[in-house]
Length: 314
Image 1: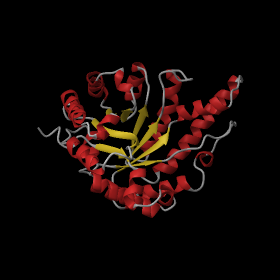
Image 2: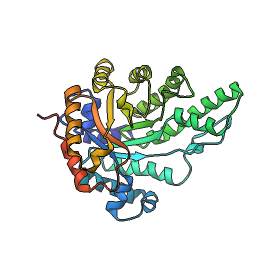
Image 3: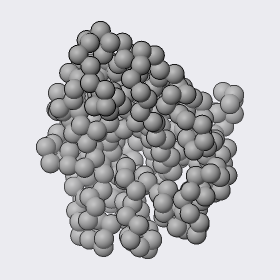
Image 4: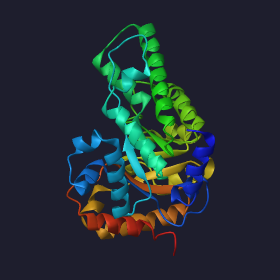
């Protein structure tokens, strides 16, 4: 895609609330980014496998789902396989032909329709941990070569995805607080991925389910956004995160508690109230990195989206 065409897509999205958020401007609402692949299949009344094998139909179904829920962006997950332990890796080791290539095509379709698109990919730290969980080696030099080669494979995959021009790419990590790698190694693995994503004019965002405060501070210096999933907020207050936002400019994504999807409206109102009180309308959004529960009525998903649109207007 040419820079000129890419500029047209970006200018068409300039009013999207995520643009204001990443631009450091005061937000008019709390952006909502739900994961809706299964829900799109339900709304389209087809199987998920059918959607996965038809990029055009998948993109239409995701657009329709976004319109029905009135969310602010479309989340496209791209999973990687875990390669066997070897001294070199290539992008083709991570993105097998078929389904994942079709998901990249989905991003292209959505961007051609001027949608605001986020993409989720597995992070290098999690992949490293999975490789070594399957292949224990006492050879320190082999381990080091494997880590470097693995990271290079992730970078090549990020380039392929970046060429589809998503608006931001979420690097999905798991537990970083007790990683097999120390903090310096984690930062060294992630920073080149952030830089590669930024090269394609996408916002680099990392998602974590467990992280130490010191590592969170370090990642906030280079990532454009950090999504905290599962029980991370039990360890850190919204006040702490708002302070880190002021210090670094890094935005935060907060995963909606699962109870909110089951008509717990008072919890949703409390969530919005707490976020507004701490962040004062800047640098924060709501998300679901896991699929929204299939038994959550669509009508309530609409209520969630509408409620999230109001907190910064009062």
